[in-house]
Amino acid sequence: MFIIRLFYIILIIAAIVFYIMYLWDFAIVLLIVLLAIPVFLLVSLWITKKNLKVSMSVNSKTIQKNQSFPVQIKIDNSSFFPVGKAEALIEYCNTFNNENVNFVLHMPIQARNEQSAVFQLNSKFCGIIKIRCAGIKIFDSLRLFSFTVGKNIELSVTVMPESHEISGIVVYSDKANDESNIYSEYKPGDDPSQIFDLRSYNPGDKLNRIHWKLSSKKDEFIVKDYSLPIDVPCLIFVDLNTDCANNLQLPMFDTIIETLISLSTFLIENEKNHSIVFYNCQKKCFSEFTVTDADSIAVVVKNLIFSLNNDTSLTYLDYFSENSDLSLSSFVYISGSVKSDLISFIDDEIDADFKNILVTVSAEEDCLNLMDSNSNVVITPVLIGKISSSITDIEV
Image (cartoon, rainbow, N blue to C red):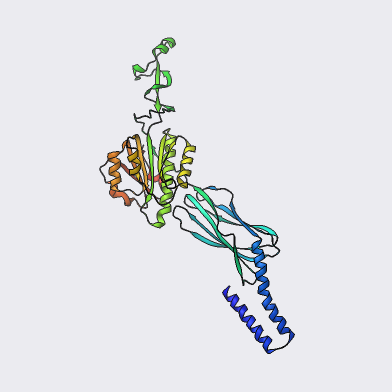
């Protein structure tokens, strides 16, 4: 654009010299035309700017990972002047690391017309994708002048993580939730306060489980199967603090979230209700959710993603200092950063039958020194992007 302006100024200077050297009418007409063209272009472009309306939209505010989605920029030009060239500067980033990616979208704008420009985006990582139109620069036909319209139009899209199938062992302990007992619909247990089923006697059944009154009526031994409590105290603590390089922050965050979903889904499929705790960066406090079904998991994930940034002012010590009387059947700590003092704290201070730390790493060697610990805490490295193969035979 600078070169075009320079060329046009040289052209005007040449027209002035031509007018001075030659007194023909053509010389004065040429000079007037050359001086009038920029004025006309500037005025028409300014009128066009005043009559442009810009908006940006997406079909859905929630998408899955690796799923392309269209973003539409709608431009309404109610003026009589078309724009031969317009450049839209588009920026987008994942709010967890705020690393901007930008590109320029080129388009013409017709007169007295409403038109759309569509571009496709996708994300390899879950989180919130913030999309921003920094502005649309419009040019006159000679590209001597430009104005910017549609500045700082923003929208956001939530990219949901995926669940991975994991293997493990769900162990039901004697600890129960005194406030609310929920029992399995499919498996018998040892809780005599609730009868799961009545069936015929099999050799080896305990005599104290025989239903004598019903047996006398049926002329055969009827045995009571007790119920299995599934509303047991099980806690998953999610810590999004990481000590990784910037280029690994998003993959690390993505793996932590998907590890949480995969483990939570595994527990629900095995009828083990549980709680999920994480630090809410927006509210500056810890949030706790009770998970009883797949819908509960979706609620947790959305709240977790929307609460995020890469800063925190509270740690696990603050949470457990306020909840020091917890007695758990199972405790799982999911993070991308684990130190020896954390292992010692969980080993000494957390009252749980099973204690697990799932630490996200870029290479398995990153936490070998931690796994050599003699504590009762089981440390499992979860390789970035390889959740199913990393979590095998976990006991919760």
